[in-house]
Amino acid sequence: MQRENAYSVLLVSANDKFNQSLTSFMSKEEYDPVIISSSVSSARRQFRERDFDIVIINTPLKDEHGVDLAIDIADDSSCGVMLLVKTEIFDIVCDKVQDRGVFTLPRPVTVQMMTHALKMLGSTRARLLRREQKQKSFEERINEIKSVNRAKLLLIEKEKLTEEEAHRFIEKSAMNDRVSKADIAAMIIKKYT
Image 1 (cartoon, rainbow, N blue to C red):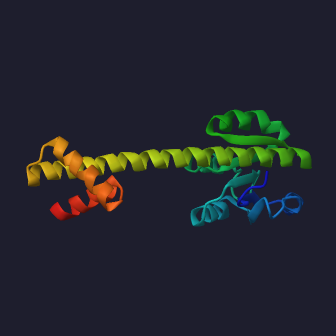
Image 2 (tube, rainbow, N blue to C red):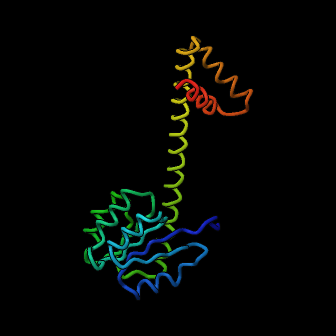
C-alpha cells in the first residue's frame, strides 16, 4: 500500500559511509526529505525548526553519544525513533531506552534489517498520529462543551432564561443558521462579554 505522503527523516550520524549507504535505498516516494545532522547539537537545532516522522540516530556522535537525544525526542514528540549502537552495549542501551519507545538495533545492520526497522518506525508513526488526531478531536469536543456551557450561563444570567431554555435557544439557533452549536456559543459569548 502506497502512503499518501513520504515520511520526513532526520538522520543523525557522523559516519558518511553509513549515511550514504542508508540513503541509497531510501526511496523518495517513501522517505522525503532525508536531512542529515552529524552532531547532537545540529540535530536538536533541526528538530526545533521542523517536525519529523522518523529520527534515526547512529551512535556515537561528535559531541555526545546520542542516547539522551533519542530519549528527549521520544519523550517530546510522536515520531518514530531508532537508535543504532555497538553490539557490545546493545543490551545496556536497549534496557535504558525501550520503555521510552525508542527502537534500538545493534550494529552492524543489514539492508534487510534497516528496511524492516524503517517499516516498523513508519507504522509506529502512523499509529501515534492517529492517536494524536483522536486526542485532538476529543479536546476540541471538550472545548465545544465548555463554550456552549459558558454561553448557556450567559443566557441564564443576561436573558433570565432557564437552563433548558438556554439549551434549546442554542440548538435552535444552530439549526436555523446551519452552523455548529460552538459557533452560536461564540456569538453569544462575544455579545455578552
